[in-house]
Length: 173
Length: 254
Image (spheres, one colour):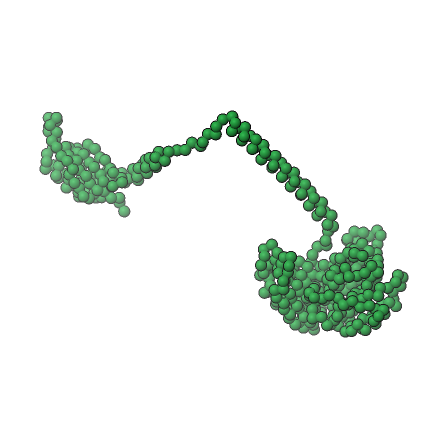
């Protein structure tokens, strides 16, 4: 004879009937089975659609971007970033401090990668050119001034002396 | 320690001792540790005050571990009563109220401070137990807020019956639970609980139990009495449900 267990526990809640648990378990198994059948049907349908698509046309490979183009775009982006990072205000201020009435600056070309500034200018005479070079060398933020080229412009009636100089620059601390 | 199956901590609470057994979780539990702490049965106003003090000290070491704590309470701390099942009073609340009334009628006003439980097994007679509410509250407080969780606190009669019930034959049996200075004798008949005695006393030998059974037989009437007695000797060191198979005694031959 099977006797029911005593339920006199002072902490644990009284045990409920197991039938409720069995019903929930059976329901869960039915739902799980239904979901499994649906998943299997969906997978079969996807496989059929793939097969039909394969018969209708060739599969297009994903479009790949050439590596060279990617590198080029990367270099351009880095160059733009360097140009934007140039201390333009400091460069202009230093050039203005070296300015002379008899020297006209025609072109300024900074090279952000090597931190070099190339300046093309015109002076009335040779001594004016040298004085300008000394003033540029003394300007704040400039160093290593080199005269790259110079020539007298024969096509101009005033015969000015056109010259190019190269100077290293550094950022302000 | 497994995260899925935390270790079990079985506690035996008797007036004079606290025993603990730690088992690994999972389907094949192994004994990890076993300890015993003596308690002062004369400490405090109630017989459980001494062992609760010991438990409060010991629980500090257990609170931090992920444990499922199950406690077995000595029959010294528990009162039992048999409550006749009422045809109309079928809800749990009504049966509890009936059991409370029964305890108040036997023990007086102090029964109002007891925690009462009724076991609904569908028989003609239900068994009810009552424990001091403060004992249950302090037992819970020992493990409140820690990782160890008190999941069960059951009287010795419940612990023993639920493990021995498959050994009880169709015609029933006597259950004899001996402890130090405590005897608990229950008569389980063919149709459920018939008699229950839980009181002070010594029953060291089978002969002592036979005398108690004979006394109960004088009171019993009606259907035939069982001749099998399942006995727990009073000399067992603790109440832990480990290696505590009952001793079957044939009363006709005793």
